[in-house]
Image (cartoon, rainbow, N blue to C red; front, side, top):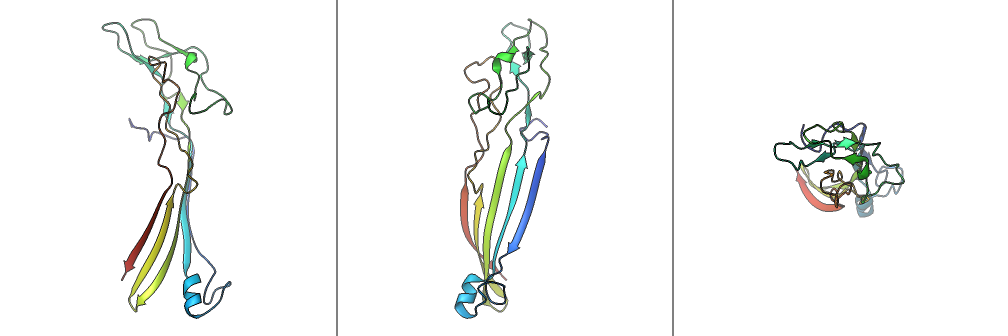
Length: 184
């Protein structure tokens, strides 16, 4: 695949749903009437993803006519320790150089990995009976609930020194939506 959803080294995903123990016939707040209808019947659920980053290569632009660009020469290990990495310097750009004219660089394909993702999507919902065969469902959905910044891969072309190694993109911020759904 030629896009950013290439092979990730590790992916953890979990989907969950839980009916809260409140309301009529439940362990807590076991009350009848309007109070029981308001506090009972709530469900919470969600989907969680913890994923390592996607791989990328470090290219360069050729400057001579007839010389095709390609991967840069790796002069040393470009990886930075976790404490050294930031969105301003994800890898060490000085660890790469332009290969000799009309040669291929020795940097391997997909030799580095970008930042991973931490995604918590959470929902809360409640069904209200409105007729014998119909229900109204209230939904509150929180995408990226903790508002964690999930950064994209860094800029990698060593021919653009002002941007190489820097991250300029991120996934969606927290989004919240409310909905009413008629079930019949």
